[in-house]
Amino acid sequence: MADQKAWGAAPFTIVQESGEARNIIVSGRDRWALEALVLAGEIGCTPINTPGPRWSGYVHNLRNLGVPIETITERHDGPFAGTHARYVLRASVARSGGWAT
Image 1 (cartoon, rainbow, N blue to C red):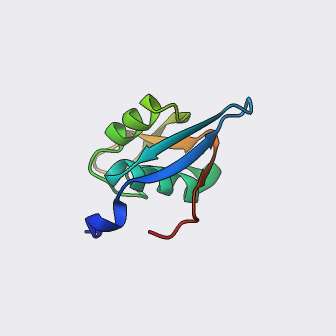
Image 2: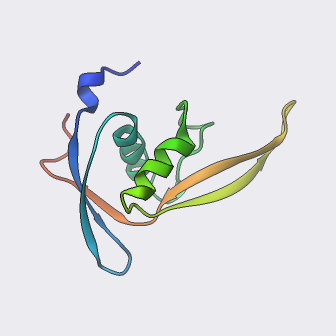
């Protein structure tokens, strides 16, 4: 598990497709999820390729802060066939002071 100190509060600027900018501060798993979405780009993240215990919860929290995240429902096969979510960031995100923790 990641060092919790590495996921302390950090400021981000979210620039919507409309050009509207918003500053937020996130920490913990919400910060981890936001950074994972930024790194994933247009491919986005799923709980399958970027494991995390509560992706839906992190996305919910980030949306409440005004971060636009699209949910795409995808099918998967296998012994436990069904669907899963793919989360794709729909804004430009920058962090003050670079990506160092």
